Length: 248
Image 1 (spheres, one colour):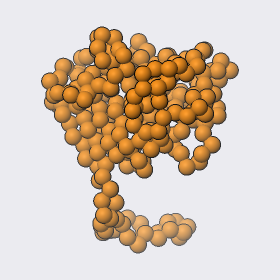
Image 2: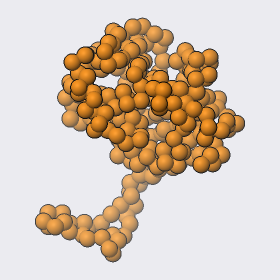
Image 3: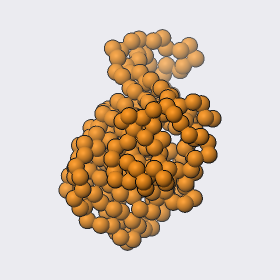
Image 4: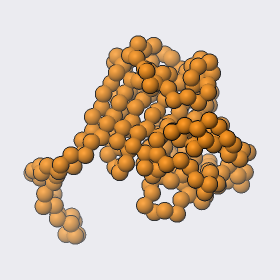
C-alpha cells in the first residue's frame, strides 16, 4: 500500500470496528467476482507452517468431524477463498492504491477502502489469484509474481499477535454470515474450516416466491406516504449446518 495512504488506512480501521467486518468485506468482494462458493479457514500455527496450509493448498476437502478444543486453540492465520473471477491487471493495481476503490457502482465490495479493514488483524496479507501472488503491507507492497495456478482466489492473513485468539463463537459467526449472504446475488455457499476440518456450512437457495401475510403490527405506509406495503413474499432460504460439537 502506498506510504502516503497510511492515514487513510487508519481512518478505515476506525470506521470498521465490528468483530466480523473482514468476513463481510471479503464476502462482498467474492460476490462482485461472481463467486458461488466461499471458504473461510481458521488455521493454527502448526498447521499453517507444517502442512497443507504452508503451501497454499485448499484445505478441508476430506475434512472430518474429529475436532480439537475450539475454545482454547489459538489461531495463527485466517484464509478466505472464493471461486469467482480471477484478478485482472486493474484489480492488482488497485490493491496498492486504496483510495481508487472501484468505479463500478453495481459492485458493493470491489476492493475499495473497506477491503483494508484486513489491516486491523494482519500486517502482511497476501493475495493469490489466477496464478499470481501479491504481498501487501502499509509501507511496501510487492508486484504480483507467478505462483501455482488454482481455481480459487485466496486472501491469506497471518494474524497480529494480539489477534491470535480462538475461533469466534460459531453461532455468532453463523448468524453474521447468514445475514451477509442474504443480500448477495451470487454467493450461495460458505464453508468454514478449522485447519483441514469443516465445522460449518451455510447454503442459500432461491425458491419460487411464496406469499406471507403482512403482520398486523406492521405499519403499511411510510410517514410521507411514499411507500405502501400491499404484500410480502419469501424468495430465498438459508440453511446452516454445524459439523462440530457445540463448543460454546
